[in-house]
Image (tube, rainbow over all chains, first blue to last red; front, side, top):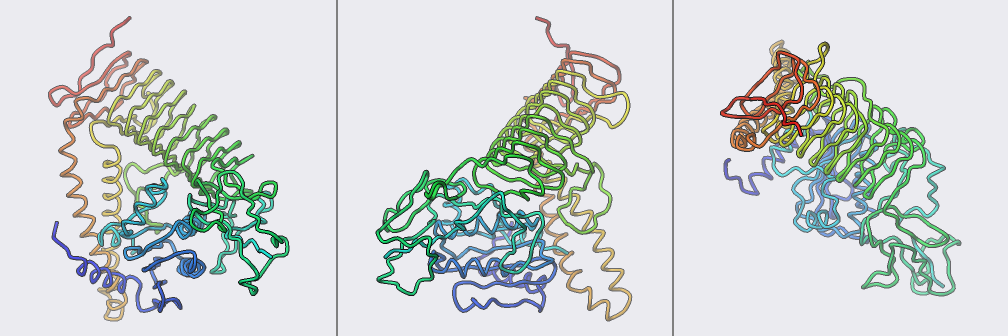
Length: 144
Length: 389
């Protein structure tokens, strides 16, 4: 396997997302704060979340999550690489996962931060989610 | 004066459900929000002092003259902020006799169908009726007291079904929702997947996956089974494919003299094998798409620009899929040592035409026989008669 630095992965991922999400990507109204959300073409939505997500901004987090999903969305990829989540916001994530499960939309978590992964394992919830650990995994998920 | 602000819906009634209108405005008929999931440590409610925060919007039902926390079972006051109520365990939250309670076991008193919608629950589920066709259930451990029809049931722990599973149509391996080419050995649409063990009285036209053991008290007909542990079939095993890596014990008849062949494949990790099949299916699909995009791009310059990005994406996906395929095959060859421990014990009649793969060995039964054990010896699948007591 080639050695890939974080910056290479991020650059590669942004190329892939620009390609798959197209020029019709829309930024979230919350982009100036902790979230960036893009709803794109090819039935795949991508949301990047960073900084601390806690009870104080939980309502905005919830709105950002649901704002990703459109009528024809089949896949949702959530990037929590640089995020910190409390138990309350993990509960919001679980509620979102339940909603996506109910609607037959696949939800993936891309490279979750160690704190989030550890919390999911401690809560015995890791098996309820699908994880993507590399750019290759994201590539395989995006629909042609 | 104090106000209790809720972080869940306090008026939730599971008997008065309707399709949920999500914040994005969409409504799905198969999702009714049957359960309000909470995780351990999640804040459920907060007591707000209205003298300090007079502008808080309030429901008069939850105004209290004194400090009052309606803490019920599996709830507690937050250790750092005693005005908050937190859940102590994963489960669902509801009001019970005026107290906020969390319960770990969800009872569905009836069928899982249009009255409940699809269910995703972080605790254990007991369905007192059937899981009806077209619905999905995911939970930690699952008990179904009725039938599982053509649906998807997934548990991170164990699954027990008391009346059996009967599936229907076939599907393909690929996870792409778009149209796919015909694939050899399509998988049944009905999927029951357990992270632990699986126990059922019978199954027909089903795909079963279990990381632990599978026990079928009756017959297993025309099903595809991936089992990480051992498989016991107390009735007949007829048609379909079993992919296992331990002991397979069949008490009744194995195979049939008409219809689909019965295949037993052992000696490799079943879930690596499943991944390999999925990747091969995806490679076939991507090659088909690539051919289509190339033919469209060749028409004229406008079509070339139109399909350029999709062609690039499909080529990139194909490259990744081929690389994963190579790596997985390399890992496969290292598992051959485990094939020596595999055993297929067929106590009943073994019909001709059964195909048995153990590691790199292959054997096809030519005659009717009974009471045999199949194993791998010197890269060949051999059989011996079981010793009588």
